[in-house]
Image (tube, rainbow, N blue to C red; front, side, top):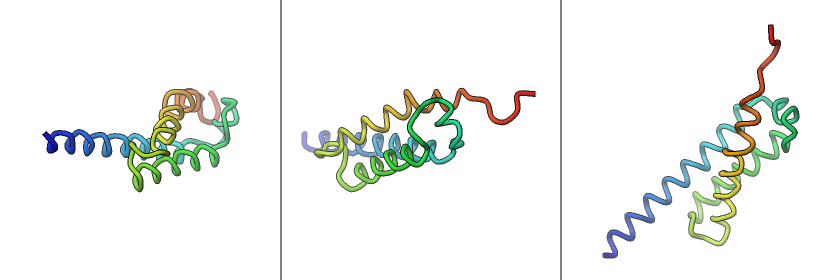
Length: 94
C-alpha cells in the first residue's frame, strides 16, 4: 500500500510543480502594461510571487508548510490575473 501512496504524492508533486511553473512563465510573457491596465499588481510583483511559489514547490513540495500558500498564489494568478491581462488587446485597435 505504501507504493500507491508514493505514486499519489509523486503525481501531486509533478502536477503542482507544472502548475506553478506555468503561472511563472505566463507572468513573464505577458506585457507589463497589461497588469497596470487591468488594475492588478505589477508584472515584477506577480513574476516574483509565482517564481517564488515554483521554487518552494520544487524544494519543499506541495505538502510542506509553505507549499499550500505557494499553490494558492499560483492558482490566484491563473484564475484571476491571467484572464484579466490576457483579455486586453495589444497595441492599436485598428
